[in-house]
Length: 240
Length: 145
Image (cartoon, rainbow over all chains, first blue to last red; front, side, top):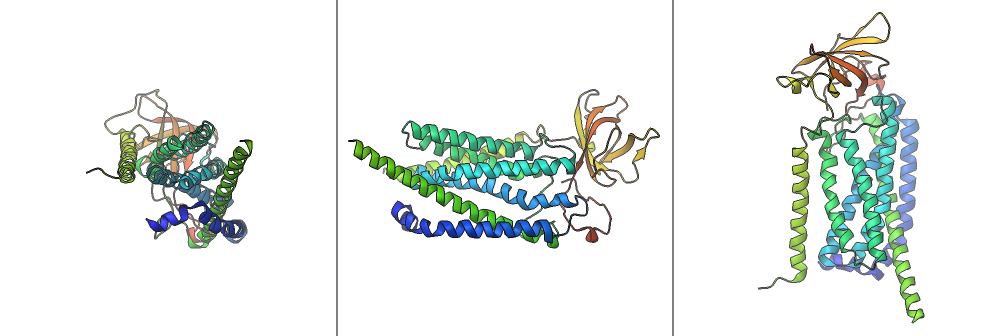
């Protein structure tokens, strides 16, 4: 795959990443802010949940990125295991903390919404429990990747963990279908949605905004990690 | 004929991915009964839960079934799921979203007579969101999802 390998070159990656980072970051922040403002002010309250419904404009993008980020880790890890290119290893490690933050945001906003809506902060139902597990798996991955790097490992063990962890993604996705849960079923499908049109549109802004913002953060972290590697290599050369 | 190491790893990785997805499928189907958050009335037909075992019962609050007792804090209602029904008694404050024709999850125990004594009620929200004017001021939940 020549096309993919072209981007795997760190110098070429930096050439693209450097100008792309601020674009993603600021466009994402602007879209997310506009979406949040629209969701807070411009949309009507829900017939049943009243104003509480507005948490969804943060909760849904957080859930999407909490799971999407792990898909990114799994794909990067798989690519690293097969092609052994260090940049894919770097990408997986750069994604992890951002994904963990979004998974946590999803759990926190869900809990705040659950108290007035369901009458409880937390219940051990299938959806809530599997999402909490994903958060713990992020923490485990971060710890494992650090321990591996500290001991001079080649990143194969965290990569295997990254692939294996994706077992949770279909479980989270289908938990509300397979098991009866307190969490409601899926509202938004590929072609239809059970959220009224007058309420759903800011969600697309926050979804897009959070995603671009996330991309900007990941590029930033990858560049910082590449720079740190360069510093370390130079220090080693100077010490000799 | 020896495969190139890269291709060998690709095959292994593809197998690993299939194994991971298979594991997810197995976990989902194996936990199908155990991981349910609540029993629906229809789940209990023919296989009742022993009395005094703490369980959750979920379903729709039957229309017209909510009766408030004279003491002001006790209520009776019927939970249905289209298959069967269970009468429930509860003493305490009900959640805001607890209404007739709406989803509910009751925590508590079965009495020997087959009725359910709840010590906590959770309102269940469905997947539909709409502004008040569209709902026609009607509260309707059509599914247990």
